[in-house]
Image 1 (cartoon, helix red, strand yellow):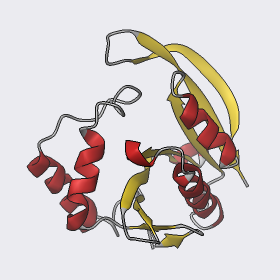
Image 2 (spheres, rainbow, N blue to C red; image 1 turned 180 degrees about the horizontal axis):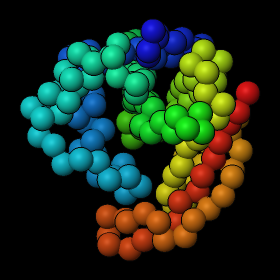
Image 3 (cartoon, rainbow, N blue to C red; image 1 turned 90 degrees about the vertical axis):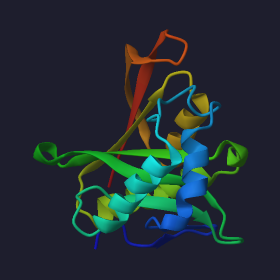
Image 4 (cartoon, rainbow, N blue to C red; image 1 turned 60 degrees about the vertical axis):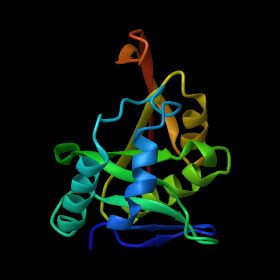
Length: 175
């Protein structure tokens, strides 16, 4: 089963539901988050259609996607997903986003560790990779805390919102 429910000490990682639209839309429209990553410019209705397609294709898509929900109160604090698969070399890339107001609580590292362990141990990948804008030092710390190691850096790879370019840091984790 793709995107099975995963649980950590404080989090539930589960498939998307239509009721997640407000929390997810808050993420993609938050200017504080788009400093480091460019989100698609979608209307709320377009984002809802995207979520509906993920729900419909959850068992047939090769891409696994989870909403990150706190166990204590059911609040959606972010999302995490497989966004690239390189079948020839048996690895995938994972991306995650935490709502800005929930940064600094360890949720991203906790979710990333659970998902990367699932992908390595249950989905059969040899390697899971992540990357981040070099300016996003918090994301670098998340990956290290989740058991990833820094593999490299490529300069001037990512276009920033202000029109400048930043480098990208690459991290990976194997069994």
